[in-house]
Length: 247
Image (cartoon, rainbow, N blue to C red; front, side, top):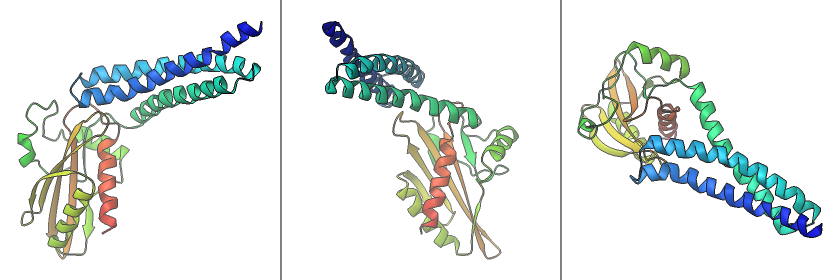
């Protein structure tokens, strides 16, 4: 009986192995697309599959852990605990992404000026072949954005246009964006940002204008691919605003 119990407690090793494999698959799902091994849609499917199997690994680890506890096997108990934690982490990460996707609208173009959004110029050459066209879709996404991200608005400064331009350029670089164009006299900055996991490229344009002693800053961030962005462009703009506040 003791031998059988020890054999059953060894299931904790299996659970840890499966959850570890799921974690590696989840990580590879995005990095594989970033490195050009497969399309992002294949990466999404790998991630989803890994998340489902990760839940199975949790069940396997729990079963092994129960037997390991009965046998007072510290190593197998630890393996079971790690398998459970890792499995829940992978599945939880997928679940959190799904929840965010449900909360935010399926749009990929966010701007502080929905009536007259800043226009891309220099980055247009880099957007050749991009699934999403550079133009703004208009009223439809404007309504969705205003409802979902009411805080994304123009920023007004009581300093010169030149000073705001300098702050904006510094903030863009501090964000880690690759600045492709900066025109101080026109108050125009263009850049792009690459997401870490999947390597998605999003383009950014900043427009700075002055009137009646105040300076207005508008910014727009747009994904090159994908119907929705899971809130990435809005988070990027908010992060940029935070950098501006520090200066």
